Length: 546
Image (cartoon, rainbow, N blue to C red; front, side):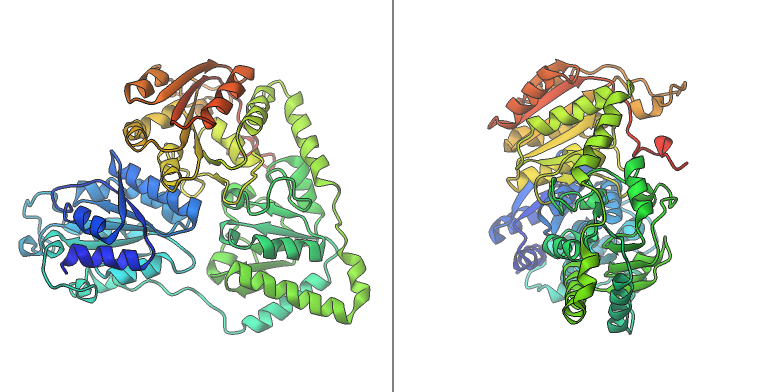
């Protein structure tokens, strides 16, 4: 077994079935090795597209996603996409080759093809681990909190005979980067649980705030919410943990004044799997009630942005269940407390309607709401939505009624423009029908990936909402240089790749009908929608608390 075989076999043992790759002169040995191991490689047209697709696959499936890239510029091209996976805690493994070990003089640039003096160092800020041990790279990516790891192998070791998985780790990149930082823990987790339960017993109006770390805890969060009579507010990354219409789900983002008011009425906040980042809390101005209880795999992550009164360390599902059971045990001993566990909030479906009626009554945002609601009506419930950093994407990210588990994804880690289309390729590669919503600017970042979609005939609909420029930068009606973009006939471009395409004007019935038809087609389709939408309150210039 050579090095390429050892890598492929280690991944197959980790249940990897697909990788996203772009071949180069240094890494071509991986293609036959992966085929022999039964791992499919989906080829992209740019290395950044490979990494975005892997990120999308990881978010859509919850599984380890693998990126194969070649040395130097090939590896470097992934860094923006890897940064998004890092900020959003996606389990992505980057496998990159280095120049042959026989040609390397550490710290000296010799002029070898694709050479860097320290390629791994480029990935240090955006990965959990940089290593030449494949098993370490796999296990660390999947160790909570999840995140990308970087594995590197000199190209000559790919073909070295009689090499095993353990032997791949003999030449380390550098000990400073090869040992992952430990996850912070507490020594009194049982005491923290007891404190949390005591605080919850005293709360009359608790509120549950859940983030991406709670995506595996739908049942447990449902039980806790019903036990406490508590509304559940989701961050962007947690959309879909509870389905739209759930009686305890807050059906709008915290940026809407009605939701902010609901939050201000609570007297205790339970934060599950969230670091309370700036974008969801309006730069930490959101008045989250105290006491605050956090359930998180990492105490530092839980406490870095707001003061927390009790931190329960561990997996979201397991520790949420433990909190619920402890409260249940208390109620069994003190039945009178049960009277305080009825829902303290008003009908949340009515709140949703109130929010939407206000948006509809504003002449600036009425058309944007029409886009949102027609999209909701047209999309099948089974489809997965990927929303880009564009005005259409902002509306979907904050307000779209998610019907399925992991049903909506949004690049609110780094806020990476151009992410949604190539990320949706990853979900579609897993046979999940998906829709990517892009702006005209973001679509141009990875438009070459249309060739990937056409070649693979992926179950994907691409919606380009074209406002002739970077629309968000025009708000609020200011002169902004560089925001107007030369028009592109995206439908014609798509057809040139062999993809079905439709052009519509506005977001009326023609749009809804075209979207519904596209999502039921057995072929990939692009919709080019000409419309100028006004941004929602979830965008920072419109934050009501500023």
